[in-house]
Amino acid sequence: MKRAILTTALALALAPNLALAQEKDSFKVAWSIYVGWMPWGYLEESGIMDKWADKYGIDVEIVQINDYIESINQYTAGAFDGVSATNMDTLSIPSGGGVDTTALIVGDYSNGNDAVILKGEGDLASLAGKPVNLVELSVSHYLLARGLDSVGLAERDLGGVINTSDADMIAAFVTPDVEAVVTWNPLVSTILEEPGATKIYDSSDIPGEIIDIMWVNTETLAANPDFGKALVGAWYEVMGLMAAGDEAALTAMAEASGTDLDGYKAQLASTEMFYDPANAVAFTSAEALKETMVNVAEFLFDKGILGEGAPSADFVGVAYPDGTTTGDPNNVKMRFDTTYMQMAADGEL
Image (cartoon, rainbow, N blue to C red):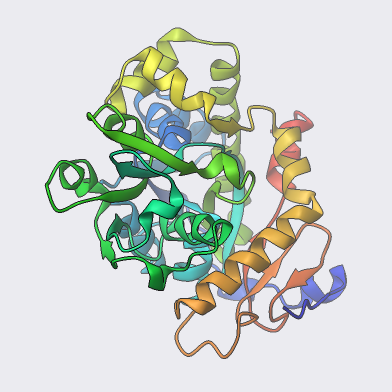
């Protein structure tokens, strides 16, 4: 894939027209159930989000959406100012749809939380001829494609891909017709408790590629920096609690995700959480992220979901902290920005 490079000055010149952005004092962000996103629910319930919002004289409402893809769709439609989503799903839905979106908090990457699960014994090669249930065109689809490629198979070698909502995945697995699923935690842990369920591939086989992020509307953030400061300050307060092993906080997150403390800790063990903002900054600034986003863009283009009528995998420009871009520098709709995470690392919030 051709990689376009921008200078920092030009990247700034191509940033959203801030005159169109609206200053406001009330914000809404959406999240869905996932081990690395449980802190968002705890932020709302514990009052930590309110504390940080009050500090900056704003109001922030954190809303749980039961269907992951629906949460992204609602953000894309403008119902929310931010949403918890992966790098891939954000590139395909809001950014591919023309909504300029910024990575405010790079929270973790999946290091085993996303998995391909077979009913019965076998391995990746055993998927040949079998139907596979997953949230179509999500990171589960990407994980499956990466796994199949590793054993010389392709999606055409399967018995089909069956689009299944994450809300229905557990019930689907126990039905007789379902032979394999691809999903994420806490669903993975629950499904693996079923007799005969075998994990045959997971995200630890592609570390650093499925990244879990709090995304915000770029124009909203630019016009309302206190919104970013409040979210980031609240998030890293909870990260401090988690890193210290605060049992009350961890138990609350465990129960909200439908498991117990031990179960939640097991899920965290397969999640590379960035408890320290400096580590998140380092990850976001690394060259490897660019390679990952090139791979993701190529996958999305191959599936025909990198924006309507996208002429190539370079259709959407992705900007990075060093001022470079991948994709089209004249159509930057995704931005990895370490500004606010760096503030947290420097104790400036």
